Amino acid sequence: MKLLIVDDNKSMRHLIRSVVAAPDDVVSECAAGIDVEYAYQTNQPDVVLMDLQMPKVNGITATRNLKKKYPNANVIIVSNFKDQEFQDEARDAGASSYFTKDDLLQLKSFIHQKAH
Image (cartoon, rainbow, N blue to C red; front, side, top):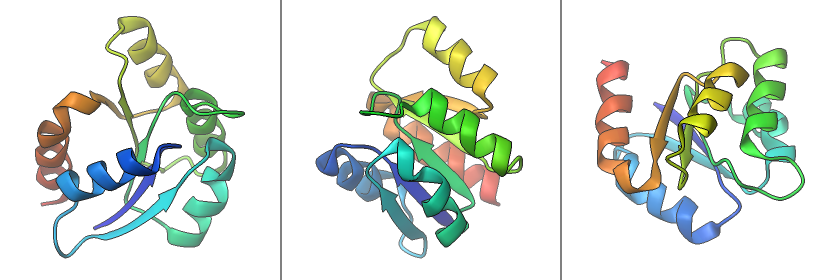
């Protein structure tokens, strides 16, 4: 499976990669919401793991823009925010799922169940 991790925090990208990715997964990273469309086009991931809070272009806007250009993109929001408001915004922007960063093991299980 090909994953694209989008988060402005390098340590968080590393943590997500180490917890979520299976040994045979191909993982690419992107540090800014503004670069998501290019990273998606370049890497053609099966799943995009998108942070919400990033400078310039946040995860909601980046998801909305990505889904406009690539309607089949599978975007999962991975955020520190548990608020229902953010979950609703993410769904409205086109995200398929929403996980908090303290649920990375559940996220891993969810992604790999969907793949098989």
